[in-house]
Length: 501
Image 1 (tube, helix red, strand yellow):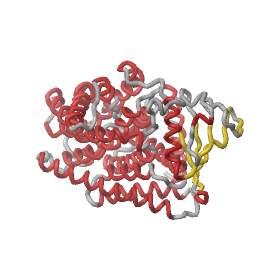
Image 2 (cartoon, rainbow, N blue to C red):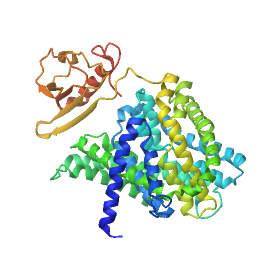
Image 3 (cartoon, rainbow, N blue to C red):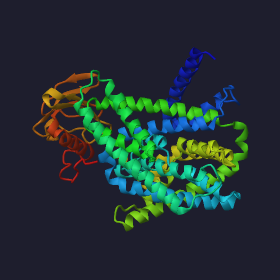
Image 4 (cartoon, rainbow, N blue to C red):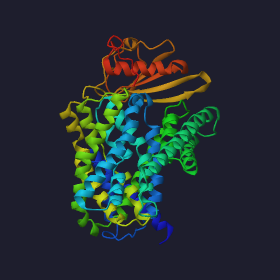
């Protein structure tokens, strides 16, 4: 088929997928379900596009996941997740191990499969999906700590699960002993973390000091640095996923030129990666083989959601409490259990044993596909209801302020653009009541399509956009003050709110 025809088909797929995003957003469904369904329609049982190469799907899938993780790190606010990192790290290690063991033991007994296949199935399903978590949870009015735990966990737990699946799959049916497993897992995580913590700060330092000739080069440079981290870690036999996430997290929270443009470019690239990944996985699946996977898939998914995930959360919370790192009450544990969304990651991981020729791996892939389709459909749309039922929702708390900045290097100043969301306590506050530091001032207000220069007594309204000029030295102080007032009003300081998260 000529290249221009493939370009036409690819462009049409992307346009239809973008329309699917709109439908998913309005209906509350995770968009990945529509993308997977679109891939099934395009496949051999639908329009007849052939695709059955699990090894190619595995390679493309890992690359797409790296890009999605990079976007997740670049758009994650470190102040938002900092207090959640200890528990998230425990969930990504202890929680993953508990989930693998509980799922494997349960399905071995219930489905009668061999232990190695059961362990592979448990490992494939142990990781929550970054794309699903980022797209669904960021629309929920959750306390910053709870949302931060889920975001950080989804960024961290890909690395140990990939290692586990690769070790368990191998090229033989021999299950590695626990000593080998933990030794290699620890080594790869340490190498991946070291690479990410080295390239992230070095890249931020270089980008602040190298004047590139075009602003569009900065987003490209940032994404290139994340893939340098990924490739370098893999080359050193470390975890590329952990390296790329840490590098992106550092770069996304550094003072870089054109940071807003970089975030926008990364979000667009990640959406393209998600569309391509989910459609490809839908093409890879065979609807004719799915009926035989429905019953074992439903049994395994029920074990995962109602037993393995709650036990992994409870064990992680206990470890965090014993180590005095975090305390999580039963309501938060219940929500964390239900919010452990699975998406593309388990399906991509299921291609690893399939590509390695492990016996029964095609059945594992089909079961995982059924689990993702069914339980994402059940869990995703019900998250707001479950959050309200458990009393962990924060409906009175405004969503994070969207702050974009333009560098004014010659003046050593920044221009901040503040969008005041509905529900923000900034509504009704007069400009002088913001009590911004001496080096900052609100210079323009955009309201209902009109702009004007405010006076000290101008009252801010919801949906206003504010332009704030601030010196570089006091920018962080300005952002903290605006977040604090947005949450608790002009008496935020009296209430002890400092806008740290």
